[in-house]
Image: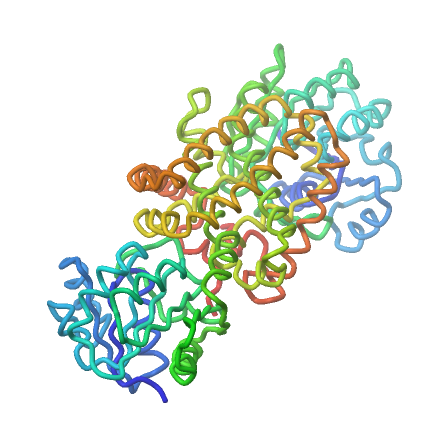
Length: 301
Length: 301
């Protein structure tokens, strides 16, 4: 049984994409949208992001049978508390946060008695804001649903069906395992990308202009995810601290090994390491999770 | 004055692209090609990579007025020694190696009395082999020419004009500065990408299949350059050791700072760092060095 009225709270890249994907794939559902920023609400109305973008979160969630929280993970508790008094009986609350254990805990605390089924669509771009979303964002990407202990199976199934309707492939997982998996496939990559872009900006002997001009040697690949929304990512690292620090520790150890090999001139070790890493990309492409064209299909004209 | 006969030694991604770009942009020049691997020579003939792909390097360089060495930087000295007895008077030898001081030194030693004008087109993809090249690879990318002390100005100008004819924007730099600039814009990014892909492969609690499925969270961006040619990259790290180790040291210090901020829950420091990094991507796009479309223009269908 699909949803009749979907409220999207937070109208950035993810919220905007959810609303657009609902319009595209569930045309019978009515959407409402809300964002704490009045300028974002105004822009959302201009571009018709949702059927109804009221001035208050109360109006946005009233009568909704699904509420999708699309705010930074650090703002989930505040958003949950704000909607509680206005929720309809039988509503399901879900979210799109990139870390799940802390979000599940925060929402369970502020939404007692409400069905909360957290989820995380593993999809995004480096863009943010109400104009950044698009209906195809979730197509062929995975969405991980992390049902809390004792969750109603029929409600979990409805949330899974919702994401499948939006084009995603859906998997369930416990929140702690999700947080470890995403620490390596998403959080650590962002941390490293932010770091190297920062390192390159701070050099004295190499100018900013040189870094920019010669970025096609590899550096530019890191600048994409390092252009992601700072508030969202601050919150991700604060909320998934333990798993991120553990993965970072492993990464640092591996980097130290390569550093030693370079210092000692151990070409065999370098060659071995560089050979093992090709297979993963091939698998990612075979699984439809990246563009098979060279250079991500970047334009060469 | 352009070149009449261009010999391309090494027929992988770079060599193949040079040959194709010469055909596209300098149709009056005749090309010869050679690769140490007989299977590559055979394939090069099948696809018409050069006008003439003889069985020996001697035949390939005989009569050439420009020789472009497109072998891994660790093989430059061997390639240089092999061509020396067969070079025509007045020939210019150049190369496309990713590190320049060690290559310039190696080529000067094995090619006494020959005009060697090293160069580095900052362009590439993750593909390798004779089928990987394409004529537009250098278009709008920078090519750094590193003339040795005392180089003939007219010869330097001819090499610069050659790369401009192939579509590149050309800059000159001394070899040591080149190696420091590229250490940060290319070598360190590759080292980090190889490391994180290796780290993710070695985890016990997160399966390879999970890493692949959820790679769209950011990890997949690193797998592209980590799929680059292992021989080429082994040689780059061995030949540009000092500059790479210095940049790696700075990166590690910056990463430790972010690690501390996460451990202490210092959200303001994280937010600050993540905000500074957006401007660089904007500049890279404005300089025409990356695709402005979200997600590198990856297909979302």
